[in-house]
Length: 469
Ligand code: SF4
Image (tube, rainbow, N blue to C red):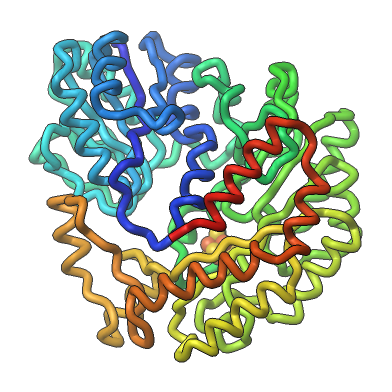
């Protein structure tokens, strides 16, 4: 069958209290999940597959419809995030107007987290919970034979199918997944605004996380890793296509230092030349690890710091101390690895404006190269959401209503025990302005600009940040 996998436009994303400037930059990453699926279908089935990334060119729905009609798929698969439900359903309606399209299937994080609420969405023939490689293959095979798909693990394609409670996993061994086929996307058009300016892509070397931060839903997913040899094989394929920078988007890259050491050893042994970025926990960061990572090409580490007080860290179950945070950032600066710090504003332990100002001051004192502030937005299914319901701060019903009838005016609940939404938003923008309006920050970044394209991207991102409202 002809299968088009679509990343929908991001025109009606649920207000997430992240400045549009920051969100805009996030759209420049490849659509990794559907790329993995398309890679599998292309490598292991006879089905013909293509990817349409509607976010890459910020497509409007008219253009999206024209593109679907032009390629004329029989099946459309759409990846869904909860915050993108409105755009997902508009994409479904758009695809339905295309005469070739017989079936529409949804997958992705929203379906994984809320399968029950997703069954029966208008215009949708099937949903897949968990990793879609095998389920999608079986679904396509059934549709191709004109059968009504029933009993496919992880799939609901019939009103009488039970809603899966567990995710389906393609394998417990990430080595079993085929290396990403970058030819399925316009891989040389994605970029990293904080990067070095070369052709950039993302990949994973592990999935899931055994930690239990209360605001995060990753712990629900199984922790699995790929071997250093398999990771480096995939990297070699990327380098052969001219990729210069890789962002390893593992949920947490350094669950053990041993794994990171082994991967760096393999990169060094093979002499692979590229720069890379990872998402790290501060726990366990030491000089030998950082020095080896730097030697292997790591130029930036992103840390989820979130809070600067012991009380705040404890409440979010971060399992780190502020001393460990400061030690990790100081070491990175000494070794020469750039840092990004993620902070949260409006957590249960920030009870006054001064508490939030203290968080901002802490983030500046930490002296990362970049910082990202978010307003804590508890998502259903996370521990903090349960705590909010228990304490009478949050109410699940608006979320359930939205999931069944997505609409543009929905606003995700914030933790509004101590501040109104407007107050939180005001403090969020104050945080960005205070961090990025410092002469020290501007001077440091001007010194790191490498070429005119890099200048243009950084200037655009900077102007967006400084004028965010
Ligand atoms: S926030 Fe990071 S460290 Fe904490 S549970 Fe989620 S992925 Fe793991």
